[in-house]
Length: 278
Length: 345
Image (tube, rainbow over all chains, first blue to last red; front, side, top):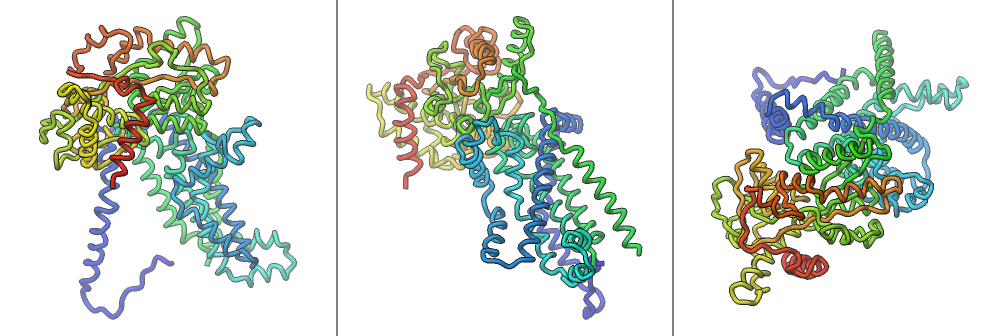
């Protein structure tokens, strides 16, 4: 099991470095991670559990959470399929411009999310290159749920690819070759041999993408229209409530998102060992 | 061998999980129906309470009684400039209530508004409120008028004039206040003194939130010593029991807020109800509701006099003092504020 930690054999007796370094780590994380998270929980429940619950069950809050889930789900589905395909093409074929493609796929990580929002508006908006053509057909993309999915796809584009590609690269090709020699088609080889060894990477890639998409704010606020109960995602709802001075309502939803991320990364941590095929 | 079965059951779980996600993956139902009788209103930040708590319910009841139809409202609130930019980008707004006339003009210049809102009652202005200074409970920094904001060590929260209409009103309030006062003293408005005052005060600004409402939230969380904002914001804070003192300057501006119909987005079938709603804003019922939520009425001063919480302003002035927004924006916001205050090296 990969969680087994090798112990240091050369230290005899009580090792002072052990409690010190662990204590140091926790201490450093305190003001940077633990306390900010704690303050969300404290502020979110400061007016009692009943007002926390009513903040959570407000119709617009529930809608915002659902909308975030759904738009993140579709962005994840797309990006995992795309990441799989891109990793396959880029690790199996060598061609001119291959590196340029790899760099381009990774680019959205470094682009500010507000820029991503502006870019989508410039493309799909009423005056955009594609928007201008679609509008006369009665197709509106911006300020709908589709716009949120597009924004999520853009900002999480490299994540699944980034997890899947290294596994492709290091995969032993002898199994695939063996499969081919006993008469399997390319598709059969992919389905029965290649894909199973990617299971772990696919699940990690999907969870990472989903977790990142559900918290997306910068691009969503530009492309969604931010209408409560129609196009307002959970992070936008939090921001709107904060702006209105309703700190408890904002924190109540923030707690849900924080717990959700905790859940996702726990699954990620524990599922990895089960899914990884050695 | 054990690993194999584990993998299989895990696969089944994963499949189940994907299935559940798939089933739940259709879009959630909007909390308001998106039928023909849904009015979408984009408002600048401080319009939220009065609209949602009084004006919408009042109009819904009135329309139901007169026409037997259910009307629904959907709205979004942000800084006035932000709202205007969202509409210019194509959000499906039917009506906008903006902080400044210039934003209404921008919508018109870009073809989103084709009618002239100045021909509506009261030149399209639905309500007004003066600009004041908010300080913490006991006023520890001794702030009594705009010039005190320039004192060294005062930390001032001021919304960002790029995104907030209220921030532009605030600049006009500070600049105009000095003009009005110097004019009273010497008969001649002293532009150099007014410019120096805005420059000195701007040095003490340490954060520029995107809207008046965001600025208030920043202030409420304990940041800064003072905030220049709509009187309404101070009264709302007092109402919710926050420790705040409202400082009414000797001379200050009344901000006036226009309503515009986004003609380009309003369908012919929706037009009558949109127009009816806009007219309703000047009804006694709506104007009294605005006063209840701390705005001044524009139609009937008796409503305002009945409200004892409004502060007394010695020398009030309005945008007309600058010759309207057509002059105030280029001459004060651009030439004075942007060129000589913000971009000063």
